[in-house]
Length: 146
Image: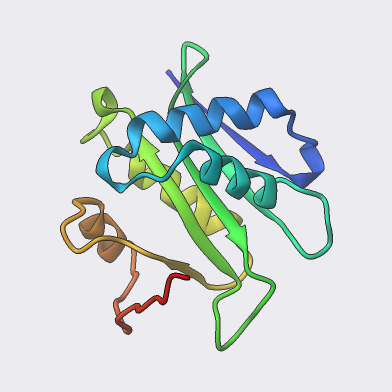
């Protein structure tokens, strides 16, 4: 049976809780992943109690092991920039195709206050899920990396 757990700043997540999530994401994001330290920084932001930060994580567990997670950061903006950005979502390969990603996304959508933005590679199979859930592609993202 899949058990869902939400973690927000008020839960005072420990380093070990954040590391468990980061380890899972690092392992299961495949070619769409980031370095482990970047994932930890995202979790520090999402689960920090500072006024200018925030967000949440939703975990799916089976037999106490993480089998899926989603992490959302608050942007501190609204209107011209969505209030939230979905930073990470991953599902264990053994659980894919069973609707777990959709359930995680629906929980994240329900928890988020305001609009949600996300970035997805054009060839990422999750793109279809996002579109089915109502996400649209209005913009072409461009970045200048310094």
